[in-house]
View 1 (cartoon, one colour):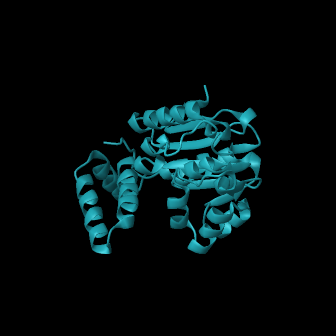
View 2 (cartoon, one colour; view 1 turned 90 degrees about the vertical axis):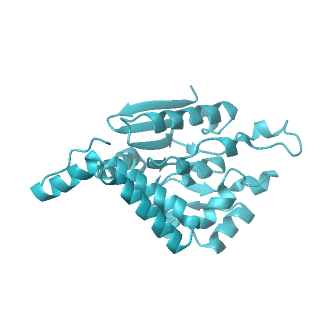
View 3 (tube, rainbow, N blue to C red; view 1 turned 180 degrees about the vertical axis):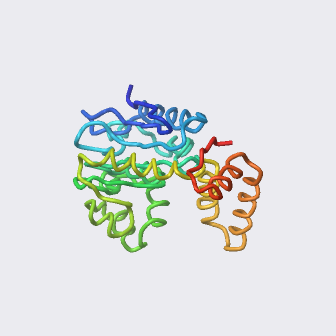
Length: 252
């Protein structure tokens, strides 16, 4: 399989597994990733997913360029029709190492938390091979970092290292390569300390509210908050607070 799927308690660990090709994303891997994300989305026992790449050299070096040779003018990129991390309300964490380029960075941009190993290189080099970052790079990168820096990366194909990615707010944390997965799991455990229904509602409000006015976003969040009232987890959260103990979340 080009994508591995493991369950570890409340976590799904999704691993792109073409290390001999730097986990470059071809059609098969794209479909497999789509299936893995759907499996995570639809499993009530899974609350957080960690996405990473096999091997030591790359999270993903991007699209498999050999697949571009037979494309016809005007052909659509079917990645636009696939499920993505930012239209799944469960949180996703990207555990980045080595090359995180092109479609690899586009995938990481759809995740909620990005952890980078100190050997990471991030960029959108598509402009140098006759295409643009049409899988979400051009549209998403300027939403995460200053527009001037996004323009530099998009228009020149410039790559940045992990420390620069952290400085500009593109990643949440930089760790040594051997600490990458432990750090990602620690982030996942921290997220799981909150009620899963509440986490999903908060993520939905954050993402859907991004393009709304403040008043519209406030109304959206009020509606989401109202939908949580009366849930088993809402009652459990209140009881646990009063009883000074950790809540036992059920996702109900």
